[in-house]
Image 1 (cartoon, rainbow, N blue to C red):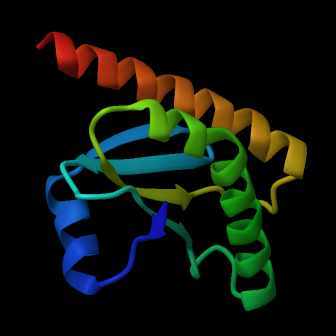
Image 2: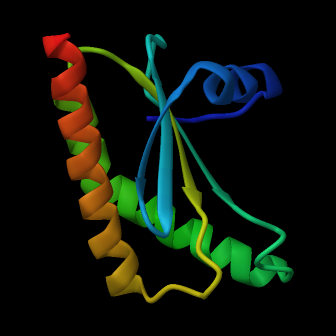
Length: 117
């Protein structure tokens, strides 16, 4: 799993990607890249201090590595993903883990619905 970087890739993801939410998390994804690309983002508007933003991003990356990487490897198609933290309060690690699991369930459900269509 590689990091999602590059202005063109991120713009394309937000222009044509599909969104799934589980407050305080939101995931925008796009099928069809040659490998799994993952990015994380935290709003500078809600968290002025870089220390706080970096802590949340670190927690998100750990959650992605533990919970999402195995599920993505089992899927036949490759995805570009951006996980956004849209909450206004500093999350607890356990709360963030629980919400991330719920987000993954919604992502899987939306994927199965897309395959049926």
